[in-house]
Length: 154
Image 1 (tube, rainbow, N blue to C red):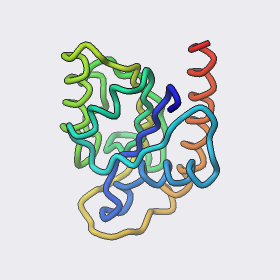
Image 2 (cartoon, rainbow, N blue to C red):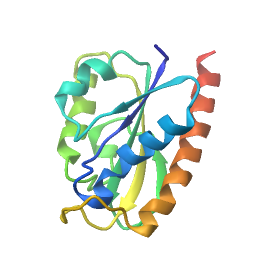
Image 3 (spheres, rainbow, N blue to C red):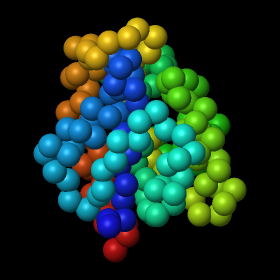
């Protein structure tokens, strides 16, 4: 087991809302050293046990925000209030999960790779061209983040 978990969050049945899982799938296809990959589905407390096993957790998720579709941001939220205002369809579960790890005293270092989308209401399994272009950008950002995290662990 590695010291870093990369957790893709989303719902593949809601078009761009599944972008976090698509990024993790791309990382799995390409391979990444020093990190474990997981499809976290639509998040929730069932992920608590997995998250607490790692000192560093990188969550990849869609974000409904003021940025253009496909914008990629790397954040380091300490508390639920530090997350973007609207993460996506499962925002409360992920924010609550972060707060619950704090309460249990076993909170890993959290990073959030937020990819801006415009909607999570429509059913479908396609990704908009803008969100598709964000996948390699997010992969590159995650690789750099993993390198930085690994160097800080040694």
